[in-house]
Image (cartoon, rainbow, N blue to C red; front, side, top):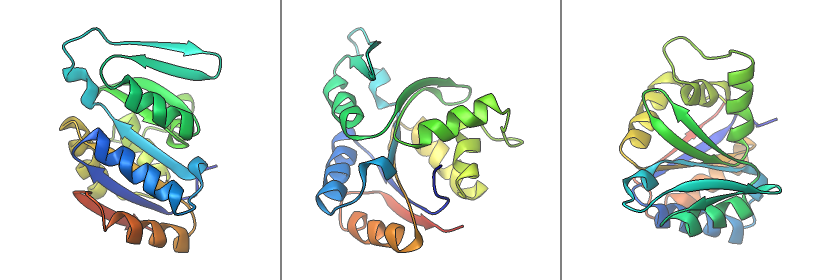
Length: 171
């Protein structure tokens, strides 16, 4: 189960998000407590495809190396079509939360399924709107799940990088 404390960082470009993931891993953060959400790959002029090889999903396209590298580091990966947001790729424990929201019909009034998943891990509605707007704008969310001291330490690490916004959400 995903802990309800989180630190969310918003990145303009996928390389910034990938750099932040690697920085957190170098600082000793557990890869199983990191999630990333994005959709910036759809502007691609080349064909895009997804396929599964055993326990790993692969992306065929210009950002395939980015997503493939993250899927190798983070627990779980999924591709969803989210009404209002379009095609969204998620890697990390947030995948399980989103699937549980879908399976349990836990979509909270007025929120997309992604918004419901974020709400279920303790992120307030006003922040969810901000994060969904970031996804619509082809930005990337990096979410660190954990105890209060863990997410505060993540904030300190991520605040020194290229994030547009870094916010702690405590339950």
